Length: 314
Image (cartoon, rainbow, N blue to C red):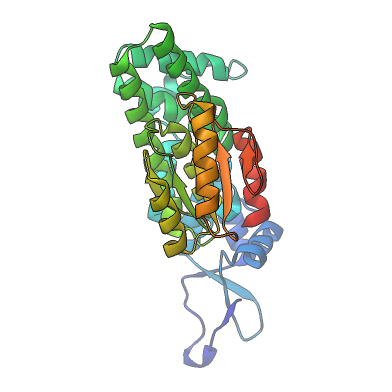
């Protein structure tokens, strides 16, 4: 809601802009600014006694950053509430360094997700952290969050697992790839974690589960959608997952099951966890090793399916 401005002391702050001037300065249409104010409470104007909207000059740089991030696939509701500093953190990830831009393919020859995954695997084989992180950053900027998480991050983890099983990669490579991807996802998730005001979700792996890449990907998506994620990580005892859900007032528990987990063990542990959780707490299960859906357990076949579910709960 816009604030009224008392003009009795000489009028409003001179460092303000009309909505038209703000639209011209940011190249964001007036109607879009009004829609954002109505839906998301940002940008927030003050009101002259006449009722006209006025915006602080600082809104220009904030909205210019928002516009740049929208071009990289972010959604208005995810970023309008972020501070300039937080937006800058996302821009570092969304707009790779000049050297990367210079090396990018010409328009119309954008690398396919499969090509990007191969580049990531090559960097993994070489234990080249710089190259791997640059590829992740470029993919985030090029594809936007959801596509990058599903088509690149998820596919990369699958290929790393296959490489380890068929002997083309060794344990050091798998650990290296997981560590780099984990660092990237935690960095990109942090601004959203700081601003999240949505439902609480506990994210955890079952006992004897150490491969948490899938859980990190799902947790990043949940944070992007405004969920408050309590991340417990790998190898968490079932009673501790349930205790965290109760203590945190969680609306859901998200569990990722890797392909390394035997299906029978996963089905048993998921059943035990479901019984340990309050009935009101949803149980979401995904990952290559996730058991079939059971009573009061929701199974997700893809990140896109989880995203659709998040939209109905937030």
